[in-house]
Structures are given as structure tokens and as C-alpha cells.
Image (cartoon, rainbow, N blue to C red; front, top):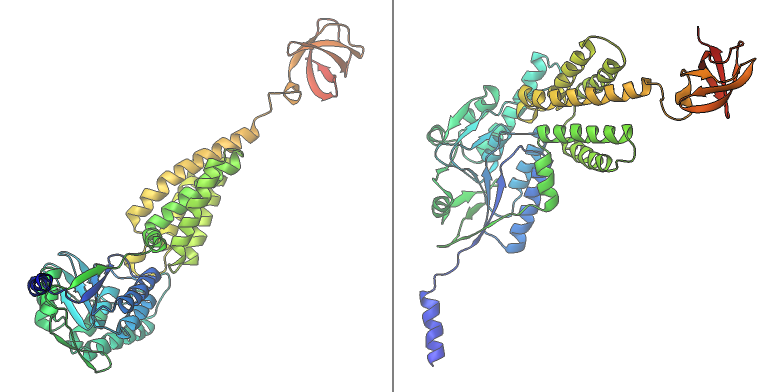
Length: 421
């Protein structure tokens, strides 16, 4: 009886555990890795029987194709999806605004901002008619999302057509978002018992209980690596460092370490760039820059070729990513990466070219051109003293004993010389 009484007391006074919430942080550029993370987070929702998927947004935007895939996944989610722009000073710009509008509940923290969802076309000339078509299509998509979620479709479309942005206060007053919460705990309290209309028209009630359990989605090691190196500046830096390592290994075979590290860094850089849309114009400019660095070391151009190579590489870095501004490598990062690389590459190439141009000064080949003294009369053969050694020699003209000779070639252990002067 006492055990039963203790059990009843424990059940009465122990607060009931609330429903589980899976949280996914989208805190970088939107790209295919983000799509993979959301797919895995939704699988975790089904596995844990979670009641809600919370997407915390702090992104400058990203790729339109990846955004479309993310929106499709959010719409098809078996549980309500809440998009929350957090923490303070965070933003959900461009592609992030599409994700905010696609969520069943859109929320922002004080001090955050959103909007500026105009599509940007890079690396190509777009005539006004084509640009209008692209903006019209993106605007219609935005209007559809906002209308289906019961939000201000007209203002939502203006984020695409006029690149408008909104603070959290402006967004809540304009009907672009549903809630403003200072932190995650307050947001979950506001969501408890709330009824939402899913994208297909079904009504769903969010039931979290008094103390919901929030489980943060933990990216896999592969996703963490890809997320880190998919930053264009980081990927480009890894590629340059890898190229330097491989060049050092090829120019000085046997060092091993520079080659191994260079290969690893180059592959990581290429992997990071592989998830981005690449402009072949940028690639061509980078190849041109490398060619100009090599030519500068071979020919005297008084720095013209090297300067051209540096300019070509900076432009190539800035044009390498054919995507929106948040994905491109800016001028400052490009200069920071390219100038040291150009200086080091030019230095290494110059050293290699000078070594190849120098005449060998070791072994028998290094004796060609040296001056020696005839120890016997050369008529035409005799002995000469060269490089501290006594050699059998054949002269092209008679030389008296004690006369000076220059070594012209070596065959076996015989020197062929000519009289000096």
C-alpha cells in the first residue's frame, strides 16, 4: 500500500512531459546541403512522433532551386512547420523569405528583418523582358504561398518585384507573419493549442503540453563538413591552398607532405564549389591568371603579366559563382585570397625557372667551360690539370706545357679542350 501511495503521489506531483519538437537551424546560405538536412529532420520527426517541426532562420538567402525543394518538403510535412527568424538581428532574406511564407506559422523575434526576395541573375546578360518574366514567375509563386497561408499576398509579392524588406514590427502589422516572440520558450507557449490551416486546407491543432521537449537536429559529420566548405570564399581558399601544395610537390618531388595536403585541400575546395552554380567565364579567367603568372617568370615584362594575372584571378573569383549576391565572392575576400596566392605562386615559379636555366656545376657536366692548365704539351693529346684533378685531354690546336685551356666537352674519361685565347 505504501508503494502504491508513493507511486500515486509521484504521478500527481510530477509535471507531465509535453510533446516533442524537432528544431532545424538554417543559419547559412540555402543550398543543396540545406535540402538534405531538412529531409533528414523530417525523417526524425516521423521517427520520434514529434508534434512540430521548428525551423529557426538566419539566412541571407541562396539558390532558387534549393528553395523550391525546401518549400515542397515543408508543404508535404506530416506535422505543422513553424519558421522562426531568430535570434535578434537575424534575417530571413531572399530565399529565407520564401521559407518563412511557406511555413504553417511564420514568427519573428524582435530586432529581426525579412524580405528582399527579388531573383538575381548573375554571369549573364538578361534583357528587360526576360527579367520581367523571371520576376513575374517568382512573384506569382510568392503570392500563391502567402494566399494559401492567409497572409498579405500583395506585400509578399512586392518583396520580389520591388525588393522590399520589413522589420518584425512592420511584418506583423502588415499581416506577413503570424507571431512575434522574444525567444523560443515564449514562441512554444504561444503555439500551444493554436489551430493552423495546412497547405491542403486541412485544419490541425498544435498540442505541445506544458513542457514541450525540443530536440535540435544534429547534422551528420558529412553535412557539417559540406556546410562549412560550401561557403564560396572558404571553398575558393581551399582550392588555392591545394593548388599551391600540389605545385610545390611537382616542382620538388619527394617532399610528400605538400602533395598529400594539397590534394586533400583541393578536393575539399572542389567539393564545396560543386554544390554551387559555376560560371565558366570565372573558371576561364582563373586559368588565364595562372598562365600569366608562369609567363611572367619566363619573360621580362616588368610586372605587366603578373599584374594582369592578379586582375584576371580577382575577376575570376568574383565571377566564379553564377548565383545571387549572397553566394558570390566579394571584392574584399577576392583580394585577400588572390594577392598572397599570386605573390607566392610567382615566387615559386621564378625559383623553378631560374634553377632550370642555371648551368649544372656538379659532376662531369659541371666541368664544361672550366679553365685548366696543360701539364704536358698537347699535340694534340696530353695531360691537363682541371678542377683539382689531372685528366687526359685532346686539344683542337697544339698547346705548350703550362698553357691555359678551356674544357669544351667530355667523353668518358677524356676531356676535349681548346687553347684559351
